[in-house]
Length: 118
Length: 107
Image (cartoon, rainbow over all chains, first blue to last red; front, side, top):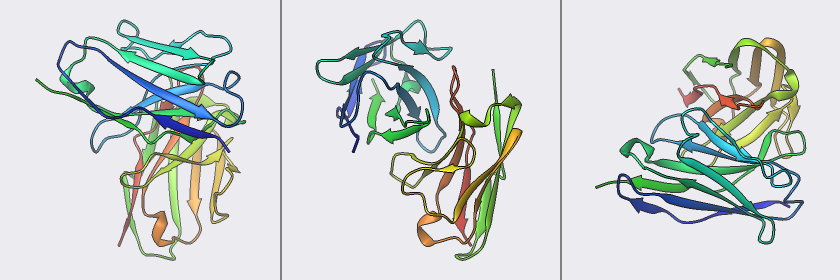
């Protein structure tokens, strides 16, 4: 059974950076994409970016390409998302999700609340 | 880029009733890349349907998906109390995108 764990909530100042981890266990790590999605309070789901660890080539959503970095560590089965130059409207819950065998996202982490506040 | 539109934005129904949720894509999408997710308050999204019509492991058979091209439907054949939630469709191609969601509320 695949399990997904995420790092804990963080409070950051505008202009700073945050790095969130997503550790998977059970099943193959390298072969399946891990994607990041964010959700602002009371709003919908927004894809931020993703990576297939085997290929180590991240894919970023438009609007994030200049301040987002997604990396994978095969040795710990962990994917990291680093967002720089934080703004107030980056305040959101950030979820990581691993592919199901079909390509849909069948395994989700519990979410990490990132609050950007001065 | 593909844009997904969901209708209605919210649906007010009683337990036992049938819910029909629509997802429309701005251009034709492969059915293999269309999924539906359920999100209950305070929880992470949960995959219900993939490939437009295939139930994910653990999805009750009262949930069914259909459609192709630009028009897709999620049907809940008899609402249970735990089904009152927000439902999102998703196209998980090169640039994944979600619809804005349909909230199914208790009448």
